[in-house]
Amino acid sequence: MTSYEPLAHDAVVLAGGAARRLGGADKPGLRVGGRALLDRVLDACADAHTTVVVADPRPTARPVRWTREEPAGAGPLAALDAGLRHTTADHVVVLSADLPFLERDTVRRLLTALRAGRTDGVLITDSDGRDQPLVAAYRAQALRRALAALARTASDGPDEGGALTGLPLRRLTAALDLTRVPDDVASFDCDTWDDIAIARARIREHGNVLDEWISAVKDELGIELDVDIRALLDLARDAAHGVDRPAAPLTTFLVGYAAAQGKGGPEAVAEASRKAAALARRWADETTGGPGVAPDARPDTRPDV
Image (cartoon, rainbow, N blue to C red; front, top):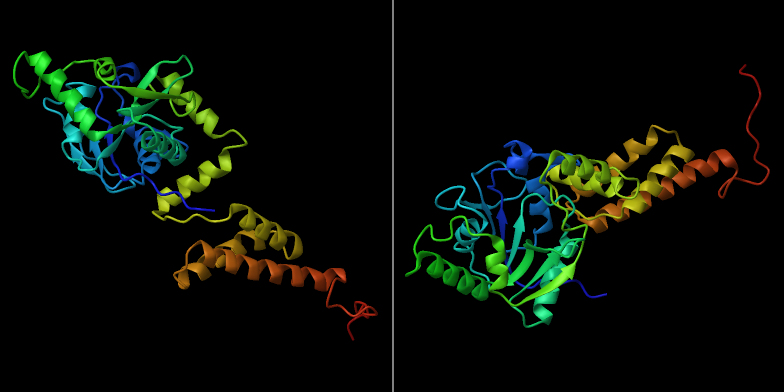
């Protein structure tokens, strides 16, 4: 299997909106699955060489570059233009900061489609077929040309600061040749408290909760490690059934500690898991008459003398 080689790109995340439908709440900081919406989006675009967030600075799980549109609150096109000025890659991923279900695979899919085609960009459409220009990958040169042309038209003269203030995103999409990819999950954004409630409930659905929890823990601990979750769960089961129930969390902790001591990655975790699982099975065999126990062996039931 060949590993994915992402198209070299930067990312611009727009996170400075007024969130009026949320009563002015700090939308990028609202948590879904224990993680701020902004951090969830930053995780999805972690392959970017440079990530620019257009908003006032705040603590984030990943390092980013901060900037702000002038004037602040001038709208999405002004914010996009401000962020784009800090990028250098030929391709740029543009995202809003309120996408709870955006994943790295979705961003990679957009970039793959951009590389394979000849259009100016690739964007997601929602369940109603509406364009989502803030879930998209663009050719940076085409994006800059379109923004400059809109600014000249709006100012009725040379490109001037503030000319993009208040312009809607549809003006940009109308000026570009775009490929559209339907995805009603990745396009789900949180504009209202109902949207936040739906996202929080969906995160906890049975098929999602374990992956979401692992991602939240890794973010909280500041670690980048892809491990075989199934192997660790099997180890916990073997330790619980073959030794004692409290052995399950203790054993998985010790496996992680052993891998960290050796400064190893996923392979070190897998090797430590195999060793501990084999030990748990040997331990269980001694009490169940399994391999390694003499056929005529019997427990000594004599009373203590």
